[in-house]
Length: 476
Image (cartoon, rainbow, N blue to C red; front, top):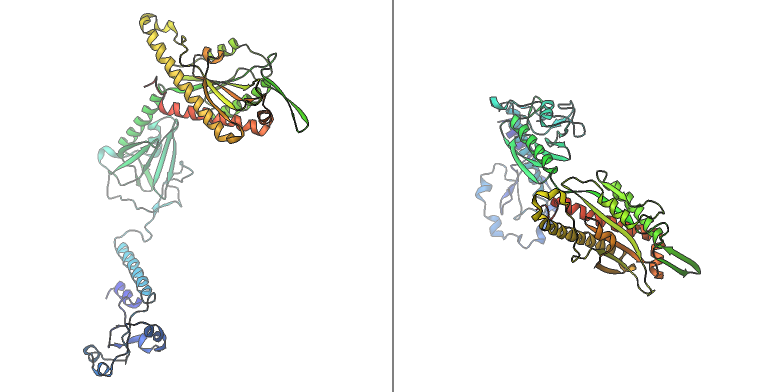
């Protein structure tokens, strides 16, 4: 009898109690008091008392039993009691068999091997104390062409100063370079495994493996990862992106813009458009600069001065751009009306019917006939993108302000600044300084901050959509 079989018999997988109508009960349960089972047995309709004739009739099983024991009425397991010990015994037996089979295979009893590195420190492959739940397989040696590279050699081959992270428990790693990421898992030598690149592309490459506690990288794996990084970095050089954002606080200096005076709660409140727009624009500038350190965020004025409209548009049009770079123009204003009941915010864009020259004719001297075609295409692109910016800002202000500030919708107009900048552009009217309710909102630090934050979110929504698509229409 093997030790495992002996263990099974000892823990009682083969029960010593045979519950059968008319049969004897032997072993430990035969010595138990009948009162333990009496209440549940009498309550069951299936457990009826036996007749005298049935009791007098001996059982073949009973006559063959060397220790007949006492006779009981037909007994059945009590629901919820007789099953649990057997499941427990089966579970113990299963683990015992697994342990016995594993011990006979010659591997280490705990099945653990040294891991490679630490999740937080990629510079320590094979660090002592780390462990991996999956054993290595040294019997599967790689072929002559796939001897494998060390971690240092693999990283040097992939690119300049890549970042590497390794999880020894899950045996997964991540390689990062220039904002791109490749995630992989270790396997046995010669096996193929998927590599997830930038969370959107799956590469099938020979997987790295563990050898004496250290990671080894197949040469074809390193070549495939390097090619993916190089292709992505190269494509970014030609992919359209937003390189600059111009924020234009309306009016300023000698031009106060719209003004309104109100008596609220016994106090006189006077608002000037130039002060509101400067305060909102400075806050918007800070938010955009923090969110986009790789982009140029410009202000047409950062204090109470008056740049002319021509100077504002000239500043925007003079920003140097590469062939795959774009620029946005957002002008902040406050509204006014002779009707003191007029209130709410508006977002304006250039009317699609307005035609202008957007193409630098010096770039097309050899193909003058295509200038009108390219100019129309660019004009359509700028109009569509201006509408998209206006929609994003309008939606975000509506979400932020709710019913406290009515929405007056999107509107098209040929304002000077939006028609003279050669880029997508919008003009935002925050509210009416001539309306008492709007004046309270514009004078409130908290409410003006909510308005500015909504404009910021609208701009970032557009930037994200533009850059993820690679430039919408004109780039397709």
